[in-house]
Length: 171
Ligand SMILES: Cc1cc2nc3c(=O)[nH]c(=O)nc-3n(C[C@H](O)[C@H](O)[C@H](O)COP(=O)(O)O)c2cc1C
Image (cartoon, rainbow, N blue to C red; front, side, top):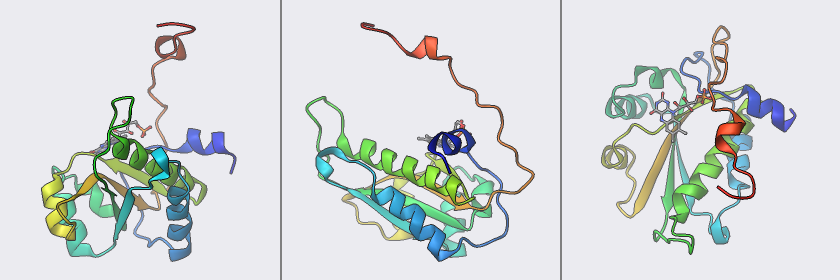
């Protein structure tokens, strides 16, 4: 699949088929995340892949009870094993690095015929407890992965026009 095609097709999938994700597909999507760039190539990302139903139920319940989360056969907790390094530009490196990896993940998922949805509405302390994540590891995001229901068409993308977001030569 061509990269622009995947970028256009990717959307947040909030309804999934009752179908497991093949291990080879999951491995390829995780590999796409692994190949992402990161500051100083520190690769602080760590992924907890969760298929166990009671654990997914617990994750969905603490995530503002987003019931659709349970439709996805897999929930990936995207974490960072990090010392919280701040780059010279003043930004924390790890959330940026993990976000890039998750974006690779979501685009590769499209190429595999899979859907994703980033979940940012969660309680990191609860996610740590449910998944046994050590306190020094940051939980950056939860990502759903599964086969989208055929009848859920992506909505037309609601995005600001380029003229509103791009400045030329100076702000
Ligand atoms: C950091 C982040 C957190 C998000 N958290 C949630 C969430 O908790 N629940 C949800 O349903 N969607 C969540 N989303 C999905 C956004 O709502 C969605 O990406 C946005 O509306 C654009 O739609 P699209 O992904 O279909 O293009 C999140 C997306 C990002 C990038």
